[in-house]
Length: 148
Image (tube, rainbow, N blue to C red; front, side, top):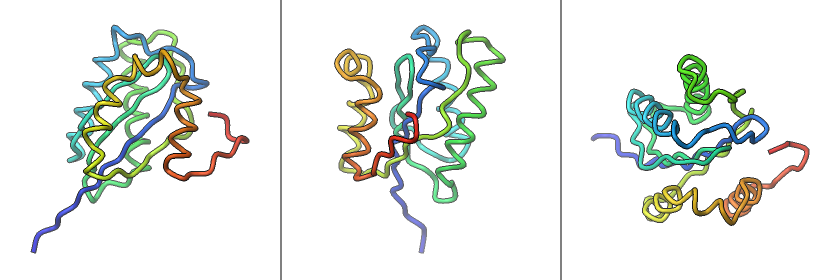
């Protein structure tokens, strides 16, 4: 018998202090780098996008991958890339935490569209409001002592 899994995660994290440092012209380089990193870990990227102050990643993860390690590896590797290539000159790092929400395969298409349309979405909704809504949707209690 083989192993079959469907481990889909919606990962969200922001720049340190939600600083708007992810310049649009250079985000494609960042996204391509994250895509390659996920591929190297036997994960499948469905969609990645973001705006000046945060990223959304929808990915299937390999069963041997621990989500906290994956996010840590993404943050460390991209931090090094950003500093080495200077693609975001005012970038000072990523926030300490992150959001990672397990998803149903049935929600995949809708989430892909949601992530694809981040720029339009954030003309109406702030990151903080979006993040609080995500926490509420996934029934995760928001603790205001942790700065988002």
